[in-house]
Length: 161
Image (cartoon, rainbow, N blue to C red; front, side, top):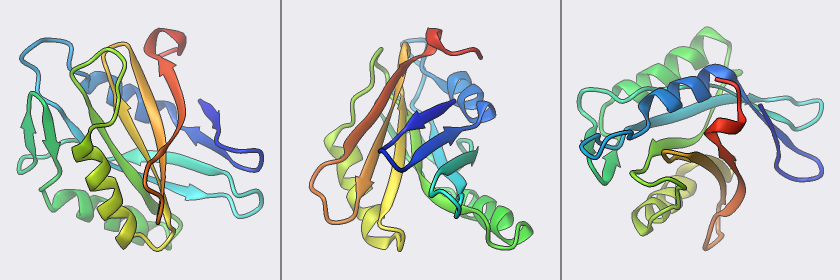
């Protein structure tokens, strides 16, 4: 799937990412939020981004009905392994998590977390995916900005999984 982020930049989200996120959505009232990190690479010829990998929820993460907190060090180890095995081609591009709603919206907690992450990220921009029961949305959070920009909203039944 390809999303146009701006006139000059496109974001390609590989099918395996969407399949994994879809498998984690909160279909039942008792399902907890789940999440992880997004890893990808930038095409230096045209500035496009290819999001290829996500980490899955891990044992030490905090997963409740209305909150996901990434705590397990395994997410960082997963990223470092991809980075080292591929000569530094891959970079951290953001976070993903589920929400117990049909059409997801970011929360104040999400916004605070994205701002904190942005201060630490040398690229100055991240892309965050929130998956609801009927759709997922992607936001771009840029360092120094007060609010993220919604890039797109895609209904799950509009893509082939």
